[in-house]
Image (cartoon, rainbow, N blue to C red; front, side):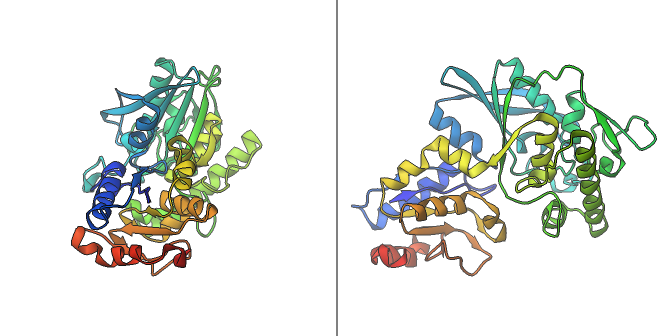
Amino acid sequence: MLVASTGHKGYRSPTEACRRIAACIRQRHPRAVVETCPMADGGDGTLEVCLKKVDGHTVFRTVRDSLFRPCKIPIGIYHQNGVRKAIVEIASAAGSASLPPHERQTMVATSYGLGEALGHCMRLGCREVAFGLGGAIVSDAGLGMAQALGYKFFDRSGKRLQPLGNPGLNALNLSGVHSFQPPRFPVWRDLRIHVLADVHIRLNGPRGQARTFGPQKFALEHEVKYLEEGFKNLARVWQRVLGRDFEGPGSGAAGGLGAGMQAFLGGALVSGAAWCGSVTGLDAAIQRNQVVVTGEGKLDATTFFGKAPLWVAQRARRFGRPVLAAVETILISHHPLFQGIHRISDPQAMRKFHRLLAANPRRHA
């Protein structure tokens, strides 16, 4: 059996979650051969999961947080094929979990610190940088990040755009952008930048970033409408200035950073779960086992926007392996990819789970 779970946000890391599930299985099935492959999707745990596989290390550098205060963030460093690479979780510099509840307000949160983080990666000699987009509080589509890297933004009258409510540009500036000017010598032009989207959400549209995730970031109804107009405005500016559309799947991830990192940095937007799966060797691990167990803290509609449990289930199905999801909270009734979903909190709560394992797993394929 393979246990390939992501973490339980604010409760268990991916490694801890996998260890716990594996221990419960072994307790009831001592002869079971259980392998663990902790997973992530660009959100919490990406640094932990990937660095463990590539034998990397962590350094800490100071950047501005989403409210423009100094904070130290971890940057994962590793070498692969003679190339020095870095991994940054944007949640460490622009995330909601690092803020107390009364400070979690997406309208004034800035991604400025991510531009500073990229600068640190370059000074560390990295030639490739992967940004994990999960857990963001920002909704500025990368305006603050671009500001930190030397971009200048202008309003309709040609005046330099000034930040509102924060020294870093933020969501309140989205509707005011009419044009922008990149730095004359972009120091990141020779970098390969991977943008790891944890969800396939688009920037605009009826199921775009503002309506889907704005309320989760404490945006009020009128603020959600403002965000919608702001994202549409910025998309028009990108089309006019760069001649390109950045509104594909994943563009709305992390408050529009999926689009902003493509437009401002030339980053390549990829599925965070797929990228982490390639680093961790997920496919090979699935093929070595007969049954796959995945999971996360809360299984809900956002799981099916491309998060790690969905990716694990899709890969397992490709190789004909039955899939079980071990989660603590279930907000959907069922999904064809998962069979026998049971809530897990301790060994006693796994009785139904174990009875299902004892049955012929092929019946559930």
